[in-house]
Length: 169
Image (cartoon, rainbow, N blue to C red; front, side, top):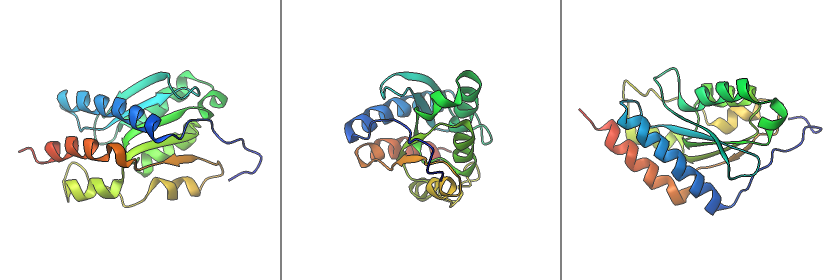
């Protein structure tokens, strides 16, 4: 990580994180109701409150986080995105963490770990999870990415949505 790169802005209060994660989980629920996997992400402005974008999962290649990060990078300048927060229901996979990194979104808040998702889904053919925590992906880069998660206050709410989805026939 570069010492001369400023840290991203953002609130770290558990109440703010829980509130934002509940908004992302509502996006995940809408994605599920539309026939997609129950993952949801939102982009929050540097003020820590304004939701700029939201994205549900599209398919196994177009995850909510990566689609959101690519679209955000096309709409906003990198300096602005550095102060933004990507809030997502489940810890981003390596693809999504890398896309967030390259989009220059400086902060991440996630509700449930990838390891917990794997425990819920098992060896599901539609969700072959990667055992590579997002912090490890970010630690290989040169930017001081901020990561908050998992967030215990909402983890069970997020897990419930996945538990129901992955057990369907």
